[in-house]
Picture 1 (cartoon, rainbow over the protein chains, first blue to last red):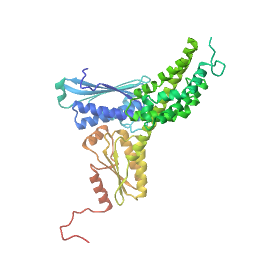
Picture 2: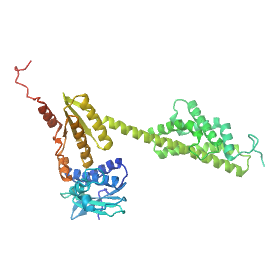
Picture 3: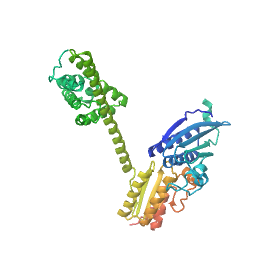
Picture 4: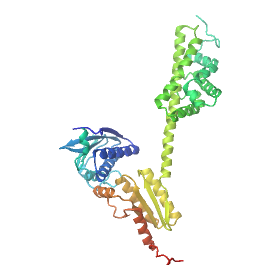
Length: 146
Length: 299
């Protein structure tokens, strides 16, 4: 994993206020890497859903953001982890409309559609880790200074 | 072995410290008045700083009297808590960091300690050490009390400002007879959406509104929770006989909502506030026509 552009960060997710900070951080990091407005908005929205999941279902956790590169393309990888009860039935949790917490049931499945790569690691009792990655759709100009 | 002077019986170290504090309160307060903490807070007159210093010394003596030198909740501190908070707050406002305020508070200790050592010159080294330790603990507790109070003040301030923001950020604007609009700005978390819903529903009643426009131009992120709040508000307004229009849906937000899979089909939406107003006026039967040519003005 390559790092750079100063987007390495670990942010706590313990309150609604932290969610605001997560969104702002992701937006800034994505803008810095050269994401377009639509892609920024998608990634921020996905981050908002996943961070809220970690807060509401996982009892709080944290987000790690890192700058990744592959074949000359920049990407932003966000890892959300909590040590909550875990997801017993992942397929069901990913299906639209299924909710265990009174929401719309669109969070996890919706977040998957908003990013390029999506991976969930969860087992009952051992917490949940969701890793998402989105790539800048055009070559980034920020690579020059690396 | 030299006899303890005050009161006849040699009390505990805390009692010795108490007697010392009461005896020397004037001198201590005078020295404190020269310290940055007092000097910069009480700028009007030196007497004021000395008076404030005396109050703190007396509080310390009271705490020492109760033998609870290490207890920040000791009754003696109650009287000066507010004053300490005011001093801490004043220093914070002057731009000092918490650490700097803490070190200014720490600077109050050496002058007292020096006076104590001078006072106990004739006591045994062991007694001197015991009393100095008691004083040190007491001054540490004072510092803790001051910081505690300052921090809780800060938390209160944040809570207060958050409440203020809730109020400020949700004005309901009457656009036309029967049409009200709420421009939403910033993060729409659960607390804020509750305020929005309440103010909007009240406005619907007060203004006999048939249409309510929720403008989300200023909402940076529309995720499933925000959408849920919007839909609940719309449903509640509908129950009261008002139709809601959500406006200010930017292209990026529209695409995100589609990808997220949110179904806003039950909600009337428009791209801009102007479009939404146009729609509402049309529904009310009010037609907007361009001004007639000059000379044909209606009366």
